Length: 283
Image 1 (tube, rainbow, N blue to C red):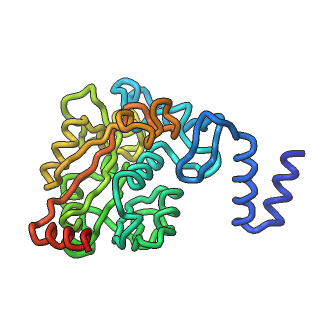
Image 2 (cartoon, rainbow, N blue to C red; image 1 turned 120 degrees about the vertical axis):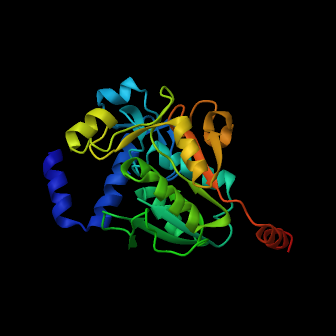
Image 3 (cartoon, rainbow, N blue to C red; image 1 turned 60 degrees about the vertical axis):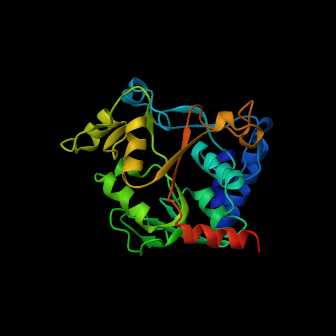
């Protein structure tokens, strides 16, 4: 009966209507009071599992990767990192209140939809491989001038990029003085230096050594932060579990990933830029 109903709906309704129906259904069957998705507003009794379970992910206790029982929103599909980034944007930035030019690399679907719909955000999505983005872009050779974007979101991309140092320099180059970039990667706190080997090239070997078929390294946390700093960023970290109710504490209301630190890179504002910003803020 369920299968025949699903087949009937798929054959007789447009994709947008189908998505609305399935979201409504998932919202109904998972409704509860344990979790709340800040992106779609769903109140949930549970989140859905997500992630891979390669042994190397467990060996190095990878934060931001691996299999998680409580991970994605069953209604909108948002992941822990989408929810964390959205909460940071909402509570620690002003980009939803003033005109900004935002670059979103490898955009997460639900977060991307919300940002693109925001009235003050001049939104640009980019990716090298997928089709449903505004521009094709190789982040080691970004086709935009210096000091172009007010903010950049580039999550879980750099672990795929062989020359990540060049990519970090490019992201820094196109960021405006006074701007910020969220640059999340999966990482380990157990290792002193990142694990990488350019001779490991097959999908099977990369999965075995790095935890995913298209990853080219496992980052050590301290090493990754040093690479950000080497590119020019002033690095800030946010430990959401210390941030109070705005980030769902004390009971992890928003289903964030335990121990996932948010990495924020800032570009120092020039004195002229700082004076201009102060004049605007006091106008």
